[in-house]
Length: 448
Image 1 (cartoon, rainbow, N blue to C red):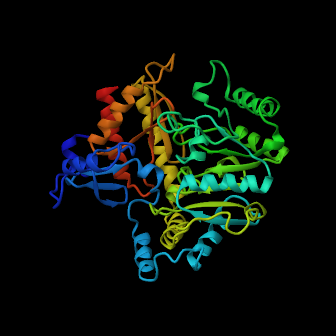
Image 2 (cartoon, rainbow, N blue to C red):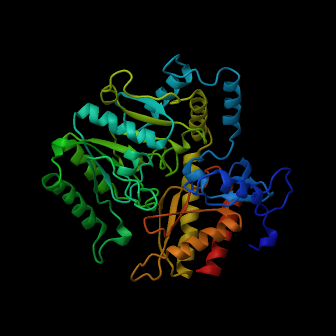
């Protein structure tokens, strides 16, 4: 599609106030360089799958605040609920005086998360906090100390979150020492499996290594939990097989180890089911949630088996702002939107469209080594050539930057920084989706 016919991208509409350059200068002066930003501009409006910046440019959002906006920017039903709540009370703090939305949201999550067993839920502010508290609860319940995560996994930037996370740069480099009794196992990466090894053979090898790990590293009787992303997010949208996930769960059950599903990026419809674990027919003992739970409001949740969640004594888990009323009412509306607006079906439609387009592009561009995903959680991995599969990290960075410049907000991922991931809001229109994919294809045609 010619840039002159685009209806959304780079429409210059003067907006009163500071421009992007002025704000960038101020940001350089007042904000440390540590918080990385993808697009060098500032938002003034978000609606659905569109973002408008201070200079009047409108972007199609394929990042969704790193998977936070499955329900889109400023969904009207959520905005209305927030305004209504603001007129009542903002934050009496659940640990001081309780409020109904907290209990109502806990009840709802207990109903919709996998499994029909009795569950309990409590709330925090961020995904990293949810992960840390899930580990605390697992240790308290089991009386064990060791925790196993997986290579390429991402679980946050706090001390324990970094310890569980596998990607060294930028997340861990220079920040040690890390939390003790954290171990890592291999997670299947079928695209990069040894030549000639089938997915089935790789699964069996990795599950065997997990059993052997208990003989050479730490006894199974000392392991409190294994934490897993059902689809690795920051690790490059790597999707495991049902055999592998079920195999890990079986090992957990065999040894009395709790299985924690980190659904922070995969949850709330991203993969075409409400939670990604539903694809694998595995019921976790504990689940962590955040990101798209509340359309951008800071809230996270830990849901688990009632007997597990009741292990901590009163006061041992919580936080001043955990489960804020605003976050709770927003989350309740998001869950209602998922049900009422068929967003799970829309996620699957988006995924089929994106994968089909990328597979067509793969036939034209040898740099596209792999196209993969689950539902609307889709990625392409770029390589210098398909034989060696040498990561094309520099090309990936150029394509991401050029897509952003042309008005499609995209993100990279993967330990090799050579994966382009798609996390568009599920409310994106067909026209917006087609236009964004046209632009991406155009950029590949010029740079790849």
